Length: 59
Image 1 (cartoon, rainbow, N blue to C red):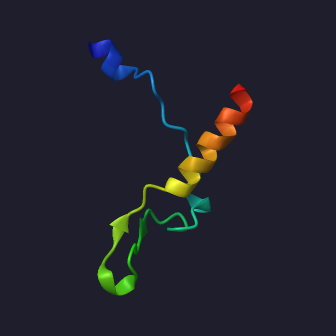
Image 2 (cartoon, one colour):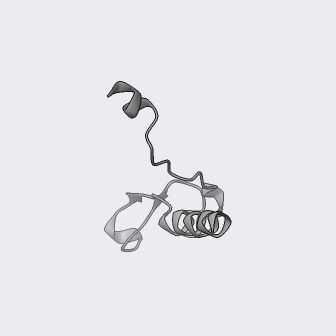
Image 3 (cartoon, helix red, strand yellow):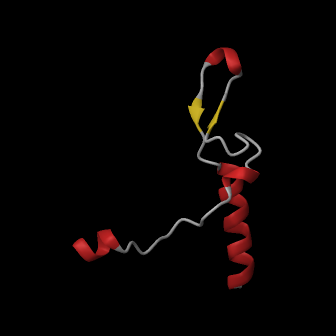
């Protein structure tokens, strides 16, 4: 059980946050504009692109 926790079967691809169109590498963005507050950026667009590239190399 501990081994499964330390080495999960599913790994998330590493992304270069500097290329993120939402936050520009800062790690934070304004989902509803600057007047509505700030949120932590999970770089979803970069994650989608990394998953796409990974799937191209596997198949």
